[in-house]
Length: 483
Ligand SMILES: *Cc1c(COP(=O)(O)O)cnc(C)c1O
Image 1: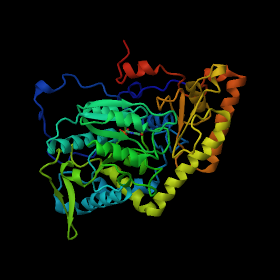
Image 2: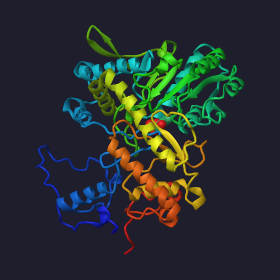
Image 3: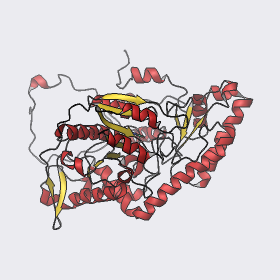
């Protein structure tokens, strides 16, 4: 495909895309002192409207999102976001608010924040939430700060270590380190479950918390969770729930009932708003009663139908400018209300059913390392394709040719050449069958014409990229060609 010209390469001097309205205030000159101003005007492109529209529409068509195809990215829950959530978030009464508006003028917005907190409490079994964190990882950092504040408040300064299983999402050890605490990793058993003996050996007077995703990143439910909670609590530590992907458990089990003390939920994965691209997210943190006083300030309180901001003297302080990503919170609230309790439970059941359906089909052509039912995602490997020189990366790249976004690959780290598929509950049987057929075709190609797979993708705008170079030396700024 042709290289698309950059915006700066389009247009001609004198072309105009919009007519600005006439100035209706006195013109102010030289508001900015000359020393701070550009001496020569910036060389901005001058474009007609149609050039501009085509430029951005073409760029958007080079992108891939849930609105144009199946996106089975494991551990990321790229599910379809019903358009009603978008509509509600765009209501001017919500989208045009200013965060510094007086409480009395934003009672409706405060009610939404208050009510979604009640819903999240009900769903998770926790006693209170902060809605400030802007992502799952941000929630983890906040949760760990809360745990530290809790221990310090009791005068217990020795608890500086956070235990993390080797199957954990990379953000868990990263958040721990960022919080200035020490990571202690424990090795999982071959079946992917926590090794209770290893956990017992790891806990002690220095344990601040144990961070555990359940279902874990292998898509497997940790059935020994009560025994795990007891080991951690008996040692004086707290149990942290990474609930980034909770659409296997909504309406089925609750972290609060499993014995967790702190939990984060990703509103942008579990409760609508597909995750990815670094867009706005929301990672509320829920806590049990003993940790409520430490939650970030302020939180919304309700008294006789009147909503107000309240501050706690023991709070760890703010973790985000203003009050979190309100638009994402509104989408999640619209989702929760339109689904209702039974709808959320149905979503969990469908997410698990879809993952098991794909796993059952694909376990013929691909290696399926865990021989048990999975939760909302399943892990396969390319072991059966490797004798032909075909690896997980090749399979992922070939999927692009068939119009599918690849699953998560090479994660979880403890599975060699992992292919991690999360179909989500929003996909139809026809979509799942189409994806399974493409995966089966790729397995057949790997055996018959491995070169075709090894050199994929063939039909995309760009071929295989140097991802290391792109990450280490990203080119994010246009530079004028040498004249
Ligand atoms: C996505 C994810 C996170 C981090 O969430 P972000 O919003 O990307 O920061 C943490 N843990 C698990 C298991 C996840 O899937």
